[in-house]
Structure formats: structure tokens, C-alpha cells
Length: 99
Image (cartoon, rainbow, N blue to C red):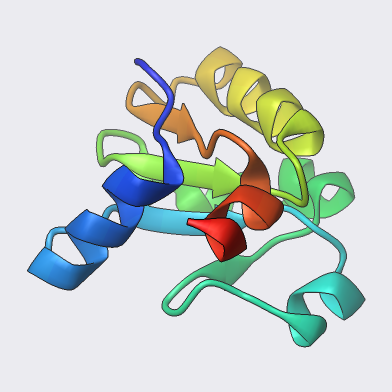
């Protein structure tokens, strides 16, 4: 599935059609700034949280981090584990804040 841009995500949030958003940054980063409605699961904790995410396997999920690197890894990991609608937020939180 194609990745998503910050303007597209913001438009979908505004229209009430936002996907599930998972922030894979560390907890302290999420506490400094976060996307409204997002769920914080640091990348290192993602493998241990798969069971909790099972009901999201066929829903659209957007993963994000600070700039896009960790979330690209998270996307690949989730896809490997059967999640079929995962998108990376291009530019991460930095891009989102500038959009």
C-alpha cells in the first residue's frame, strides 16, 4: 500500500476519515508532541504488542516516527505479520508539523 503524506492525513483527520495512527517513537518523544488520536507503541515494543493489534490486521494503519526511518521498519514488520493496509507517514512528525 502506498505511503501517505502529511497534507493527506490532515485532510482525512479534518473530514473524520482518519485511519488508525501508530506513533513508533519513544514515549518521551510522544510526550513532547503527538498527532491527535494516535497510539504510542515504541518500535522496540512492537513485537510484543502484536496480539493487541490483531483486530487491526485488515484496517488501514498509518505508522509514523520523527522523520520516517523507524516507521518504515515498523511498516515492514507489520506487513510481514499479515497486516495488509499499512502506510508510512512520509516525513514523519517533522513533516506533519510543517504541513
